[in-house]
Image 1 (tube, helix red, strand yellow):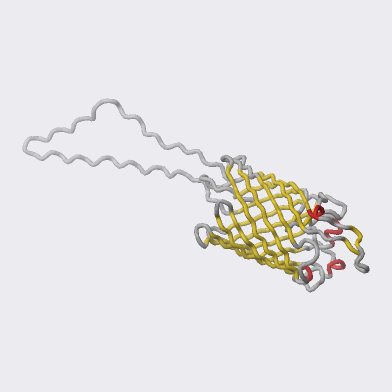
Image 2 (cartoon, rainbow, N blue to C red):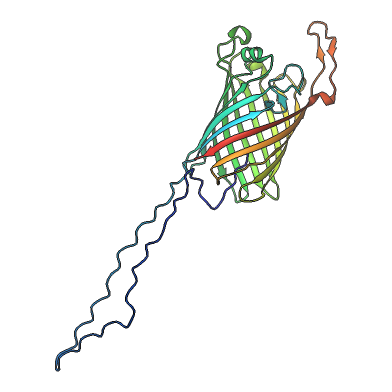
Length: 316
């Protein structure tokens, strides 16, 4: 989601109403004449004008500290084109609950973030929990810098942890994946970006280290301010996975379109952001692992997933 910058500081506090002090009215009429000096004596010195007391300091709203608190709900959890909570179809509508928080540390360009994903509907919640898909806990550190007025560089390291996974299923008590990323962004009539990351399983297990891949992700996006309180963000991206074992299998290619409407009902601090998304990825035929016989044929149309969501948040 793209947050708007406005002329008002995003403090999270109401703006104080201040009234300038008003001077008391003086009597009408000309000022009194200075007394005349006695003959032969110099005129008395004109007294300096009275010094006005310093104006009272006007209180200002506190500066934002860069903290964001966010809660998200969606009809599906789609990551790089794949419906993560699906049972047997990309269109399986299994609800996502996603609380998170981030802290942009002053003007350093460094941001620390936490995000999590919980499946709250569907008959496969237990299987996804034991198999290191549900109860995802993410810790992210990122650094953003401007190379030129229009060109930006982002560096990030994300770690994905699954503390509720079953060691009998995954071969370890808590699967961990690391995802270092570098991205270039260019501000043009539309915003362009190219991100390169490497998703790597930490533990030496077939379903963890064996699922590692290089990911290339060009994107194009555009944001508008429809009025003072409403925005519109559109994004379109393509993803290419290059797994360790080669370019074959599900979810090698993905295309994702998103549309979001951030709404700031009371100013720039609190927001409600409804969104929709449409993604496609390649889905291969389901085959018997022993014989290779096709059990369920899949076509290009089976790779689509459509979802809707809403985020509620506060910038402090």
